[in-house]
Length: 300
Image (cartoon, rainbow, N blue to C red; front, side):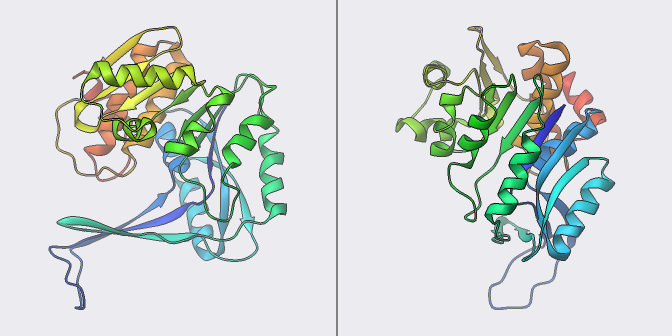
């Protein structure tokens, strides 16, 4: 079974308008609500691809109820922990020429609620996959990913970590199955400017030396590179299309990769399918559909 963790889910309220004028009344041309959070995105895309998962996380208040009901309506199995106080956050994303975002803080998570999460995680078994994605909310210890991975160290669990800089570097000692920095994050980690595939490969392998098993480096419109634990380096471009929505594209790539890999255990095919899935989201208003993924897969 695949498990995803979203510590701070959100209702993403997306507003489109011609122009945003500060200090004035602005009227939208369209609006949409999505159930946000990197782990939730991964679980949703997996479901769209016909792969089951269990979405773990915290919800609170009326917004939390809306998130849980909405994610269930998408067909995703949830096992959220309901908090007694506060409300799950609302993120406002204004698309008016340049994109402006206002992200909420989210509810406080106490020690008792955190212990409940570890109880759920303790049920994960050998052969399962766990996806840890996104930033850590201020209400939780900054080393929570490390603590989770340490608690599962005695089990044969494939852990995927999609996080940035120190948060990612600090978990490498627990040998995650897959990490997915982008090329800019990879540059920041080592304080260098990466200008070529050869340089990107060198520093991706440095992450392997620090403990990562497989390193997937995304490069937006320039495609991606995968350095595997068996020594291969694969490079993949992107299919042709018009970018409509970048939100969730990286999460979709992770979902497509693990959906393919745990079916066929073929790294090149997983990279190809992950690329098609990430692109399907980027070329759509919402998250990737199976039909769109299969269409783009043929172009790679």
